[in-house]
Image (cartoon, rainbow, N blue to C red; front, top):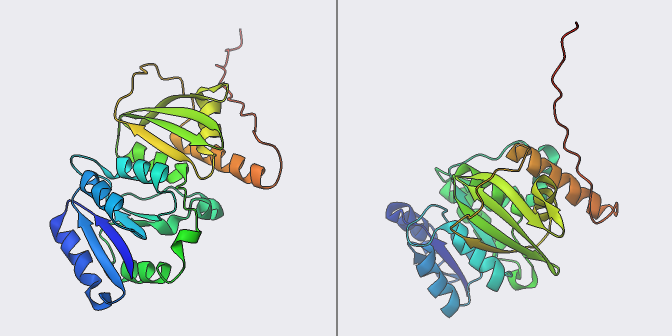
Length: 244
């Protein structure tokens, strides 16, 4: 029997989702939690095959829960419920598997069918490291203040957010825009989130969407063997000098 965990502090929505799986009770056991802390207790005591979580919750939010899962249970796929839209990344939207993000109000039947389809495969044979592109975008939209410590293949970097604004980044000998683009491009990252940011000065020059687009470009170039890093040149606008 497969086991799924649904985490949402909206009790009405939670009950609707639980009821949606009742016809499949012989094959799927549903666990529920109203915040990330309760969810962690269940994950540590049950063999969970899939997690569906909201983002904004008391005690421990969805971002912290995702961070915990990515570090200790990277084999468990995480589906996210959000009220936000993603920007248009064109064909490259599949780079961060947009199918794992379900917009509220939920289309419960479509969501249920998606989960049923996923549970037919051997989930534990897959590595589902969450992409930092949508994660960073949602941090921005939810105006979260935090520090992300990101690890991947013996590399470590940090991203610093103030009310959702990415203000600086550092790691692998890089800083600011270049560091942010490099870190966000890492695949299958381990994410640690701390709800404090001691950095005050904003050094990032590009808009968040520009950072994410550049990170996607770096990912693509790595996949095609064009090098481990791409040098990002930030151009500043020069003021026009009027003719004398």
